[in-house]
Length: 393
Ligand code: HEM
Image (tube, rainbow, N blue to C red; front, top):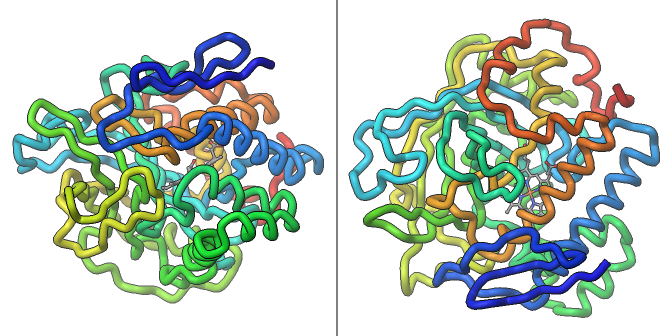
């Protein structure tokens, strides 16, 4: 296949077999292209596909995500724009103060497939419904969803896609760690340490999901009539959440979440943190820390997860069949930086492949409302409790 990358007038084109694909958006003033980043993203996606083949297809298993395969919880929620949001911030999904969106949230573990009791980084992926405007994912411009993907750590453990691809390759071929370290000894050693800090050393290990703060890690745009700036987003508990000791089992986080949701609603504030010139904030560097001082964050919305039963096969299965990805987005919230640009290529590749392998290609397309999820009332909870991947359905 002929593959060629062209940079024309600040536009980023990938020609695959003569056909334009992937991102064709102008780079924002805060962005710059990394060397061969489209090639790097495609190679990294192919490595992840190979890992999924080894982990799932070769073993005759149903194919789960390569990253974040373990769905801990799949819950209905609402996402309400702050009624007092200052006018300057009213853009994109935040245009109308007080507007309430239906949402689905998938909580996950990033390693896989392992139980909740394995120390790890946890994901909180939010999909809101009823969002108008053209979506940035090439093959789903009319989708009505907008996604916000977050992890319980402020920064990504690699500065760019090239380095993250090198880290992922170690899983595929453990000996490649020597080449990775030789290439850039200090930076790459620090990145491997950051992977451990985010997973086995994560300070959230031992806590329940409702006690955690989640972060976008990498930047996005906030663009409106009177604002045009990179931002990072975050979700943190609305108020201090008490700690209940986890049960220590492979479903300890699922059980804890369900027990809390048996008793009442859960609440998170959705916040933005703004880019500041001269503060050393970087857009192209996934490890750039914009600081954790609570005063750096401005509330834009409230997320409520109402009292509910989510621990059923049907509901967990529903989220596993969804695709959450940063480019399910409108231009006002365009994902920024080379890690995000690579995610456009990689998530699409991985998601399409896993849906094809599971014979459910129709589920690659975005749902149009939360009603299909709300209609799942079968209380059976069995196979999805298994740590090992269930056999193909
Ligand atoms: C180059 C860097 C990255 C690569 C290669 C990568 C790769 C992936 C892949 C392949 C998936 C599964 C997609 C699917 O099958 O639908 C995934 C899911 C996910 N990623 Fe990333 N990722 C990257 C960066 C990030 C960053 C910066 C975040 C920060 C928040 C993140 C958070 C997540 C979350 C929360 C999920 C699970 C979403 C869900 O619940 O479906 N990833 N990632």
